Amino acid sequence: MRSSLAWNDFETVLSIVTAGSLSGASRALGVSHATVFRRLGDIEQRLGVALFERGRTGYRPTLAGEELAETAKVMDEAAVAAERKIAGRDLEPSGEIWATTTDSLLMGLLTPLFMEFQHKYSSIVLDVAVSNQLFNLTRREADVAIRPSNRPPDHLIGRSLANIGQAVYGHRSFGLTPGAPIENFGSQPWIGAGAGLQDLALDQWMSNRGFNTACVYRVDTLVSIFSAVRSGMGLAVLPCYLAEGDPDIVQLTEPIPELEYGLWFLMHPDLRGVARIHVLLDFLTETIRSQKQRLAGAGVSYRK
Image (tube, rainbow, N blue to C red; front, side):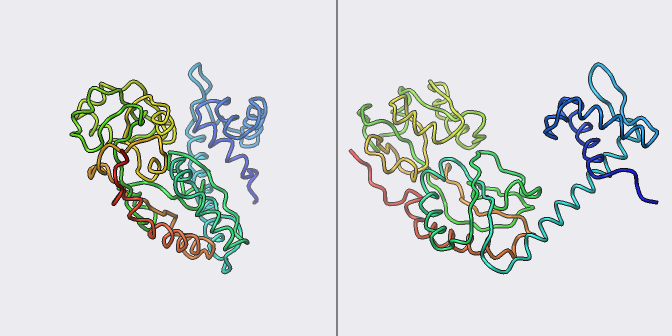
């Protein structure tokens, strides 16, 4: 006997369980509150069982609701896995690649490389999402990620492309001497990383030197920190590749060893055989590794 439930019924129940309310489920599903209410009532009527207890704090699933939501999770995971496997069967380098990276990498490194890649592989379309948060590649929020990391997630596969060096930078108008002892900069205003950057190594480095108490401004993207340095707001630690080309910004220290991090190309294992992703991986490996000294900040002389 065929089930009276369709996939969108399971999806509705799972969304309500996850959100704990009809309004939260409606936002997740992209429909109105009334639509979710009507769908739930219809599902419960067909099943002849209550799936939720309604209360002031929201919608709490009954045992039947929990069982239906667990089944929905299994179905959702199976659908995502099937999509990944089907996406991995193409043989020709064509189609669309969903990529995610950070604003600073896109601005200071990747945009000209992506342009060169598109000219070389005109049948591949890159759809790039800019975010400082790592998208869920398991759920195919993106196909690949080009991310800074010293500990990439174990469930993803990838390749280390280069090491990124960072140094202290300040506006030329500050008149500071490049190469001076780092403690000499403690009396200057500093720009810190906001919570969204989640840079524990930088936070610890600044805290150990007392620079965190000298922060006059915090912001959660590297491009925004770079912009603040260019405006003369204060000193900051920046990736060398991002700041090196600006004539108004002075590199004040050598690259800081404990703040160096890796640059990775990451993807889900199910996509390892996709031709278009393979050619992007090889292209970025070659072009980025050819700039490894620049990215590490090696050989950059102080501009006085």
